[in-house]
Length: 304
Image 1: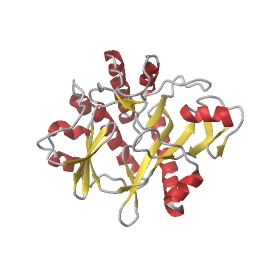
Image 2: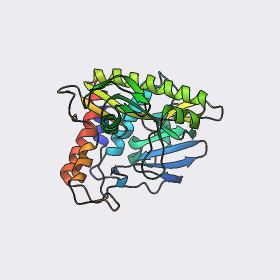
Image 3: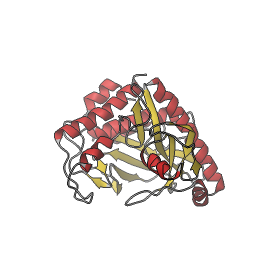
């Protein structure tokens, strides 16, 4: 794995918005990642695109894809204690060999097994924030999880809760109850996914605590091989998939400063924009702050 100094040295001055020129078939292009087919494996390359309100901004954050990939790789190494992951064996060497003619892409790339992604996102919450807080104010519950009365915004939950959602190809993911998730996955797979999700969150919480961070919530994705074995896939515990707060200054009863892109959403909310494409360009100071937050999260984690 790369060191913090190596990661800093690999950050570009210009944002990589698309990946062209590779001798592999591109089979998907998401909000951030581009996926290439290598027969029994996939190459996943993280660009520097940034999105909000389901719209991709016309300008990206230089190095964001590198930082997201390196945070994921760091966490995948730890998550392997809990369950198998989609990374191929000897991952870093395999990526270096595959991309020897494109070394500028290596730090933002993952080479993974080809698996069947499950059609849900495994969301887990340890604190009352975001959409969970909004729902609690209306119902004193989050989906099928009843919660104590009188809780405050950003307060720690009595115990982490599993609140899965559908995976939408376009538009918003839809939260679903555990019962609906079990209907979608089947009882056996559902039980494995819920167990793995809570175990991974416990691991993430413990490690984040050592780094001076609070892991408020996150989402995991899983896939299966032909034999039905479960693997952790996609990204893991990055600021794009997780809500991290600094421990210092934490006080329930209000929103917390975080290492995610909430401040980008807040900036966009201040504009006269209807949240429909095309999205407005982000000013230089917002771009710089975004990069600093991603880098700050990586440095706190990798310094422990």
